[in-house]
Length: 101
Length: 401
Image (cartoon, rainbow over all chains, first blue to last red; front, side, top):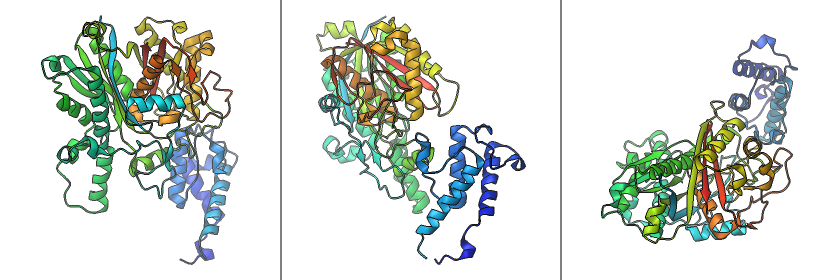
């Protein structure tokens, strides 16, 4: 499959999808979330985070190499909402770079 | 109340197919974790495990019988065969009705379940083999042990995830101690390394990609194992009267529930089970020389278990040895406590403490003596064996030489 600009997921839609997923999992209104909202203050526990990552992987058809024993191993931080948005964008860019043109 | 002793033991795991192989591997500190070979690993994040090496069921079972046996029942029957043979007991002449079979299992016939679902859902098979259900039921291994040895007393399976075997052995111990039965065949079995199960473990994000390093600073999680260990237990009086060799004594059993998180462990819950075990055994902390830890190698378990040991043992915590043999035979889930009972009995009998293999650097949150990498020659009189399951189901055994 050829990859053109229209197939690339733009950053606004990444942010929108990530906010959807986090607000649903954390059971908070989406409008209350900012990039600086920390997952800890949303009371996202370890299993909640694993569910968020599962939902992100499903939504973006992506592998997030996250190990709960070694959270930094994914090369993506999960401290606040902005980290998650940036991390997903980075992983998507890496994935697309690996795809044959 | 009877004193309860172990007079037969069998073990099958990544460390080998009998007790002698286990003894040699534990003494050598040999880690049996490696690339998975019994399943395809394409598409899995976790590609390592501790599989039983070179297990050829056709050596142990004729083909007609084998058709009824899932891998987990095969392991259990081989280990039970060794245990019964070692005990010198025969059950068909009356003793069978006074004997119990209590086996721990976490999931049961998982490869049978996986294969049959794949055939039905993926391949569109119109029918499954008629033995599918009797093979996959979690209680099958216990039933086959009764049939093989003519045991007609109580038999059942205990399931509490990773604590299944300790719960089974503990209940069997209490049954013999109270005189409900004269003899029990007890332990645990598991064979849950299937593609579907590994996908589930991958999703939980707790599996190590490299190896299992319990209590080590750079630990990255657990590694799945498989196998079975089975013991024959009976009253001390009975064992003495028939002059059989005594391998060790079970002196206490304690249980608790965290009533907390479905996956995260609780130090208070773990400590409560250890305290209950000491009380059941009428022991004080200073009596205990060695703890075979639950020691899964996850960040959460090892720090929490260390805290629980401090809570229960006080100043004595720093003076006793703690090791996780999961670093060598992997985490065999419902069989874990049974393999660790076997390791602990071997340690008490043979005068050495099995090490925590793959240990690289201490973690400030894990500050006990974990016997890193090399077995230690030391005569221990009393040991404990911890199992703390997902869902907060805790079971601890105490053993005496």
